[in-house]
Length: 452
Image (cartoon, rainbow, N blue to C red; front, side):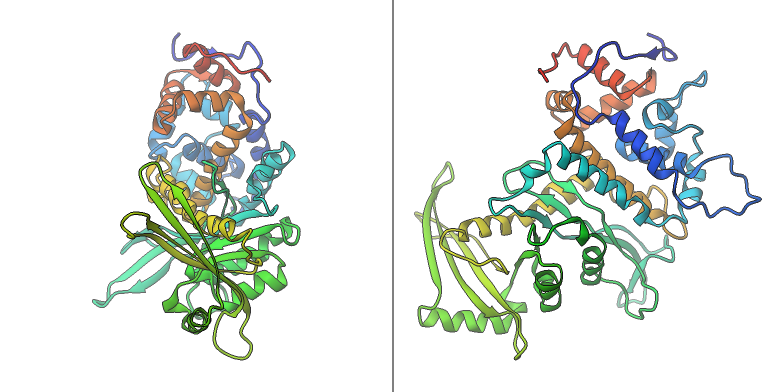
């Protein structure tokens, strides 16, 4: 088959949410992006086409805009960026950057919400609830750009001892997690950027508060448990989550940053005031002793107006040697009992998924999170970052809702192999739809679709 031939779908594929439907939805959504060009400027290209073309780079896990356009665009007026990603007139890489630079990343937040709604309507979101019927949302911050030269007005910065200024972009990247699930679901990020009317630089704590303000309405009261490291275990944020937004939290709580709380814990331990539970587990090689301690209603900080929280601790030791294998402690507004202390510790430990299965994947598994796809003067770096996270969410949603996609990903188990195959096929052939592309791959691998 020659490169200019168009491969068309011949038979229907089993899928609940097709890529074609997703791209049509994004095209419709991105047609409302604000256009800041002057009336007399050249408006040959639509903002939606620039956004669709940019998204295609991240979805296909291409290392650069230039390489992506070279590989995807074909001769004779036929183009996979058009047929697969719904872009009509495709701007150059520099034009894409110019068009998207003035657009703020919050214009793409509704697309994250739409994907989560599709997952909910198709019964997949319920699988992310824990046994207490709450969704687990973990917060963490990530730096995705750092330079001593490249910067824009939305960079944050710091000076080192030698006087050198370091510019960087960072963000809060919340994800929905479940302890035993291999998947995480990206939620809209909150970029850490200079805030109007604030002399202090923006920070992770302030960004989390903005995220809650912008997105809390999507969840009914007492249906979310927020997870995070010790940075989040502070009274203003815990009080905000508990009283204002009426949700739950389980945050890491370290002794060196919560001295007043741990003075209470030590005093209670001295008089037998802590509840305990212990169990033995086999890890496949040797026995482990899991020891829990917990207490309800202790002050999070010093002072008369200290918020009362519940505290739990898990210590894991080697059964034979007594060597400590793990230790951590948390504060929560869930009541802690002998029945749920193991579960609360388990979801507290789930916070690591945001690093191992979210940040690590984004940085090392083809998403090229730290790569400079284009910085711009205003919002471009944050827009590209948001589109990259959206691509990650779509990959996960396709695995959960599209049987053809899931069959191919499971067969081509290595992520890099799957996306390299996508890039190779779209370099040499033009497909009229995602269904055609997936069918071609399934036929080539001599696979059979599972029943509906």
